[in-house]
Length: 364
Image 1 (cartoon, rainbow, N blue to C red):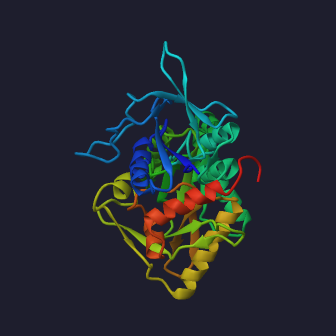
Image 2: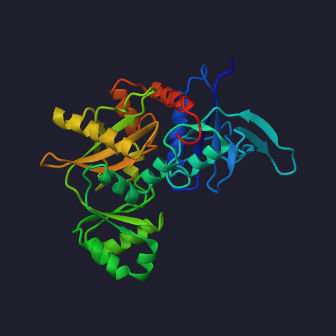
C-alpha cells in the first residue's frame, strides 16, 4: 500500500509568518519518511501557495527571520478535490495527486483562526489540529475568555476595545480600560507570539499601547496585570474515546532582561527558560492539569493545545489563554512539556498525524 501523503503547510499572511517557518522546519525534520510521503508547501506573505523550494530557509540566521521562497511552482487546492494542482502562467495545470492529511504549522490570522481550517474542510482534506470553531474562538482572546468563564474557569479582569468604539468613543473606552487599574497589558485580540503587546502604566502609555496593538488587529484587549508565575500545560487528544491528556506543567521565565514574555523572549536564543515540572505543590499541579483539559474541552479542541495559567502568590490559578496551534519547534514549550512527560518530538508529530488520519472531514 502507498504511504499516507502529508502536506506540511507553513507561512501565511500575518506577522507570525517567520514563526510558522521555524516550526515547519522542525516538523519536516521529524516526520518519519519511511512511514509518510511529505509535501512541503509555503504560503507567501501575499497569499500565494507554492511548492517549497529545495533550499527553503526555516531558521533565523544572522538575526534575519525566514520567509517563504516563492520560486517554487504555484499551487492550488480546488474545493472538494483533495488534490494539489501545480500551475504556471501560460502552461497547462498539472495535478500532483491527492493529499491524505495537511499539517498546518501556522499561527495567527488567516491561518490558526479557522480560515485555513475552513478551506481544508471545503476541499475535503483531513488536517492536524482543531476545527473551524475552536480555532476561531481560540484565536479571538475576547471570545475565548467568554467561553472559558462560562466553563467555570477563573479569568482575570479585562476590557475589549473594538474599532468603532476607538474611533468614535475613544475617551469612554480609555476610561473603561483605566478602571482595571494600572499597570495593564494591551494586546491585539487576534494575534499570537506576543506580537503587538505592550505594558501601560498611565493614560499616555495606554493610548500608545492601543495604537500599537491596532497595527496588528483593530480589535484590542486590555488586561489587568496579575501578579504571579506563568505556568503552562500542553493538552493532547486521545487516539480513542478516552479523555484528552495533559502534560506535566512547566514554568516559563524570562531570562533576557525583558519585562514580560515578548517575541524576542520566545524565539531568540537564551531569552527564556522552562522548568519542567514546575515547582508548585502536587495538588496544584493536578488541579492545573484538570483545568487545562477543561479548557480544551470547553472550546471543543482537537489534536493539541497549550494552556497558560498564572499561579498567584496566594496559591490560586488564573487562566491566561489557550493556543490551539502553539509554537511548534522542537524547542517550543508544548513539545518540551510532552518530551518531559515521556512523548518525544518525533512521536508527538506522528501522534498528531495519526489523530488527523483517524477522523473524517466535515461535521463531527
